[in-house]
Length: 226
Image (cartoon, rainbow, N blue to C red; front, top):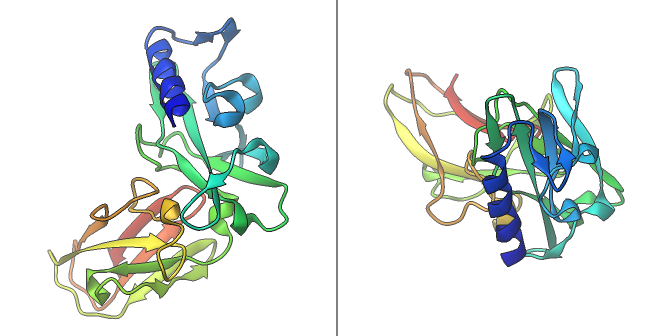
C-alpha cells in the first residue's frame, strides 16, 4: 500500500509539470493508459489502450496483475489514466477478483475518456465485471441483496413500485449475498464502497416502476423511473 501511494503521488507531481509527460526519459503522448503493479503505477506506451467500436480497450494478461488476499479470495487492482492535450483524468482503483476469472488468461479493460471522471471509477471497467452475478440492495428492500438480470450486456434490477417525483432512496450493488468480496461493492463512484458509501436516487418524475442498471464495461450505475 505504501508503495502504491508513493508512486501515485509521484505520478501526480510529474503530471502537473509536463504536457506530453516525460517520465524517466519516456515521452508519453496523449492517450489512454492502464497502470498497476506491473508498471509501478506509471503508464508506458505498452499500456496504451486502442479504440475499438467507439470504446478504448486493452487486453491485460492475468499474469501481469498482482493479486493479494482479500475479503473473499484474491484481489488485484488497476487504474485507467487519460492524458489529454490540456486535461488529465486519473481514476480511482478498480479491483479484479481472481477467483471470478476461472481459466481466463487475460482480461479486457474498457474505457471512454468522455465519460471518465477524475478520481472516480466511472467510465471504465473490465471483462471480469461482466462475468458472474451481481446483486442489488437498498432502502427499498431493507438492504436485502437480490439478484440482477443480465440484459444486453448490462445488469438490471426492476422495482415494481409506485413512485412520485422527488422520492429518493440509497442503494448499492455487490457480488454475493454476503456482500463479499467487499472490494467489488460499487456505489456508482468507487469500488470497495463500504458502509455509508451508497448510490443515491431521486425520482425525476412519477411512475409505476424503477429500473436500476449497471454497465460493467464502463462502471456506470444508474436508476431511473420507467
